Image 1 (cartoon, rainbow, N blue to C red):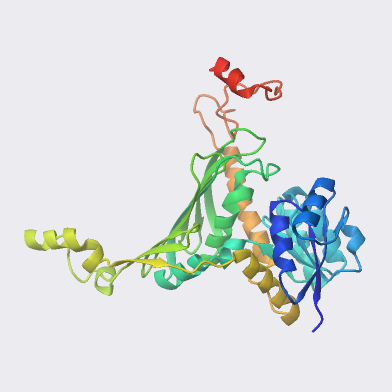
Image 2: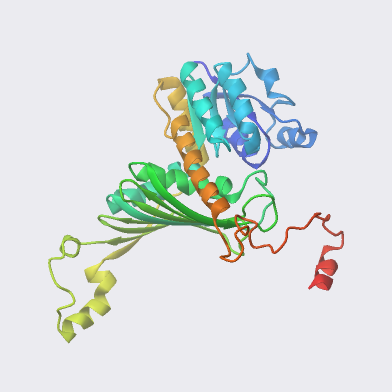
Length: 369
């Protein structure tokens, strides 16, 4: 089997990771990394020692597949051009920032028989897979994804930037369609929401509470699943799973726990998570989820089977994200002021002009305080 000829479009943080991992695989030929920035090209040359070009279109005819790791606003046009040339693509999340654009890419991939995988990398997190094997059928999910302000992905809000990971996960776990979304969000620095909280209900009855912030004083990536067989709390950063098993006698209400003697109540209090609802801590071996994602995509190209995160599923995540963004825009902050809505609703009055950040930022901010 000849090597698959692959390019990476975009030499930012994720583009470098993709390029380095592709370079390390024996069955892949990393043809080039495309980026218009001379500085970014030089970093690729220094760190990965592979060819660089300023325009990915110069690689047409030389490649079989490409990873798109550009800013989100560029995903649609680049993917459209590549898929139109029958080039298989791995599009970093979110697939696009527009439902209609995502829909068009789905149809284009079908017409051109291209394998399109969307970079919803948490699907490849072994801790999530381990938790799902334990909990039975998920009923309620609570997820929190927070970080400090990194100045990355400022062309999109936190819903498309961070929450999209958990949106895709819950959509893969719940059957049916989204029937209701209630959300609120706030912007701190940019032109989009930097913090968001959403409650999403599915037609199967499943409910997800999702929180995302890129303006937080701590980093957190946690995912909690309440299922028919128990509860699992996943620390996505450390791959640690805490599982509480629900015994059949508890699940089926065999005994009336409220009708107990003082001695029995003391036993329940002392042994709740050892004898009644046994708790276990599971450390799942960590894996390189991006590498696994790439290999799943490459295997799909060779086999003709669907990748784990298809273009259709990527589009579905974008569609659900749009319901969250629409709900944020409609959220009313004040009963007295009907105009106080959306991520900028906390401001009494929007400034007519945004001033450049002061050079001596610390002293200027201290004076302002």
